[in-house]
Length: 535
Image (cartoon, rainbow, N blue to C red; front, side, top):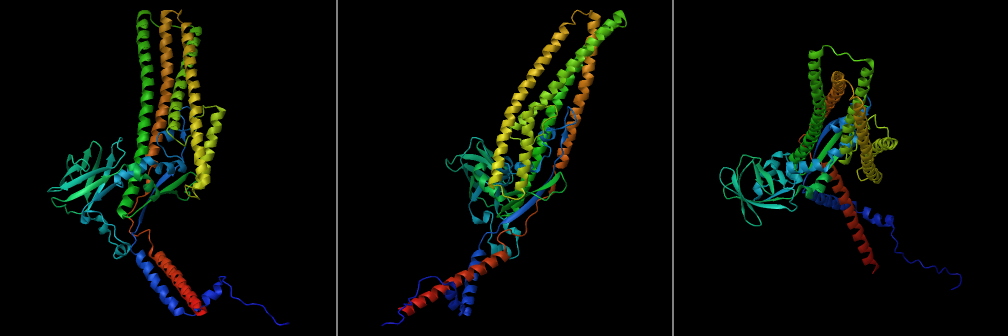
């Protein structure tokens, strides 16, 4: 058949979206009905979710360098005293395992009660909560808090509890059945392996004969789960040196969410105040020992001098002896000052070894390597703070900076230890020089020797008193700064609105999901009809 077009027009199996949706859109009424039906199904399923609540509190942080006891240069004394430091280090402290573990035990996140449902805390569905937003549902039954496990306990503890009359109960070990004693509601029950407080929200006391099973796990076993619900953020900068840190926690109970944030902020303040009190006491004891030692020398030499004056009248010393006494006093003052510096360095090294991430080197540290490390640590902290204001904790560059900071702090601790050894050696050398100088004065007349001892002790005591008074004054200022600046800006409030799920978002997701499902079903129906017609 010459000249005839023999081109075959066979259908293809490719996916043509326009052609596929065209017959679907022809049945808009059916599509709308199915969309509404499936949206209602998805919305109904969403209404059976357990709502989550988020409570938020905030603390005030101010970067305020302290003055060194040896001069006017900034030092790490305020940080060692628990004083406020940079926002980065305070965020790390608020997210620390120590504070989280304390909050877990205080709120009883590691405890679980098994027994009659009327005695266990309720967790209503979303639709139940939305009807009236009744917080009283969360205040029914018994709850456990103030849980602790002994340091050597690494497995969960299980107790059988049986109530008697008047809110009293007996406790037995679940595995062995061994009786452990009697307890009372709202009072601590202590065992060799752990302790807990069993309490109740309402006034109804469990009936006699009621049995419960209590399981307490080590707080560390729920630490990861707790940390996922905890969020610590720095708010917008208030001044060039001040910021507010916001702490948020989410839980299925609005009361537990509030209690967790409250426990974290209270433990945070208590920890910093404890550090301030502890180091303030140490510095005070050190200064007191130094002053008492010199005061004893002054009194001893003064009594000896008074005895000679009674016998021989006024003692006169020539100019050469006075110069020798002045030289000896200067050497001993240098020794005392070196010992004060040595004490400050020891506190700095101790802080670095314990994981402290904020510090400023005292002005008398002239080691170029340490100065370089200190500048690098400040730079790393600033870079990490900038990244944290924009990204999550698991952002790779931020994780890398945290690792670099940890390594840098370890290197600084090692270098500071070496510097401390050199400082100790310098103290030993000064003591040897002073002993050698004093041995050259042994040939002096006994009366002149008595006067020299008095002059030396009196001058050293005067200078030492001034320096230790300055140190004590600085300690008091730093401690007062800690107590004043460790303040909660916003106390955690009881959340009366759920943070998840949001009704508007749930409705939007349900509508979108219903449309997707309805469209898919309509496309499937049309393809089946077309295949059937092709046969």
